[in-house]
Image (cartoon, rainbow, N blue to C red; front, side, top):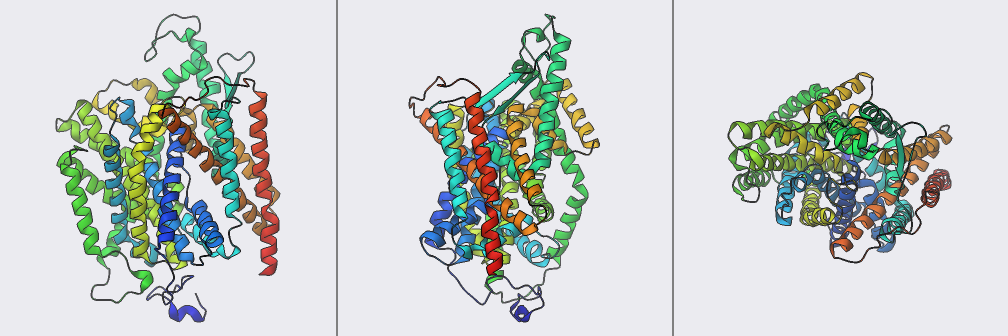
Length: 640
């Protein structure tokens, strides 16, 4: 900055936060902690359900920031932006914990090795606390010293939302509207069974070519948030699987009675769904694994550059007694390293994990290596592009080979390998999110150590409930089932099984690997397309519709950037509400099933027209909500 405030800037940076270091405001308060705990649990449950459904999670920071503004400022008349920052920090902990958990641990349920809720919570908590602790020593280097070179996109966007909070709680209503709409549609469809939530049809004279759509508002919201390009690539994968591969396999095997593994029935007797279940899922899993590794390989130059730059920065840090202002105070380094050491020792000897000293060493080495890299990469490209899956796959490959070479094989070795991968995955997810949160705090003038404590509280609360959430969802829907396919966890299971037992249909897996390579050579994102191959096309179609809605809004507003930003922001809030509302009702329905509450079994209206109309209405509401951003933003600009 070049204005008169520069004298108040933090030493050596020339940057003045929104709330300067000389000013103190309410921050880590009871109000903020209670609201943060509630939202952390809500978004942990919602993202767990969503991630198990489609293999993707969505950022909770902006919805949490808007909700906190609406509740704390709009209802309780509290005027501290730093309280709102604490709330969004705690909420993203729930999202990160859910992501790290559902990408790995559901594989245990698929092996019929049902972990106790205490075991799940223990794995998640040690991973989450390691993620926070390992990021603390990196904050000043990555967030402060490299403020000009590492933008941390989500963190900057959230800071802008918080700084515009003087508008009051009006924007929070869009999240509430979306929450109610998504929840009501989910309750009517999957709760009361008033209409079907899935429609599909075979294409005339095109055998085994099937197209369908899940009419879930959450999928529409996901498509809006991720945009048309990613949505389109995901649909391309679905079309490749359901309109090319499945009909091809069906055509070649038509009329034959020979059984081709891994199917237990002749191809000629299989429907499109049977072909997908017995063949396409393995091809899709191979493609996802290759896509994750390709993503990791593409970031290797950045990976090594980030590692050396970070370690060099740590070595060159100034020593001596320095008086730090409020906005530069982290949790003391001594206690951070003590915490890391204690966690590693606990992991090595805890009977709940049983990974031994070797597993603990792998977690310590790869945890710090990948946390360092991930924290820098998300600063450049954002959390949504961070190769967390690729890093987790790399960890699984290495630790599984190590365990197998040291004699830890069979189911015991598989469980130990997955446990190590899960701890590292949770640490990566949490460290990536806290990096964005600390950037937000740096911009608005938060106190770092209070944010770090808030993140640990969020990890603690969401980690304690995530085991219960997984258990309920498994007993109600079945993890890895058609209702909750858990694509990332299936991938982790296939990797570990393949190395330990070698009993997988490797030809199908390698077909998927080759497909991912070809897709990458075509200039597409192989991981995104691969997820589309793995999932039913019913998931990709509504996501694509959401992406088209986003494109229409941006196209209609292309001549006015402020207008476009206002409309996209409103639509994003509404879409976030759709996701949270439907996902949370999905968890509630699962709890009711788990409690043996009588849920209707038969659908009242079995035709395709009613669900199509419902989905159309929700789509029109999303379009209208996005377009409503015009009047408010223009009025504010004129007032400004």
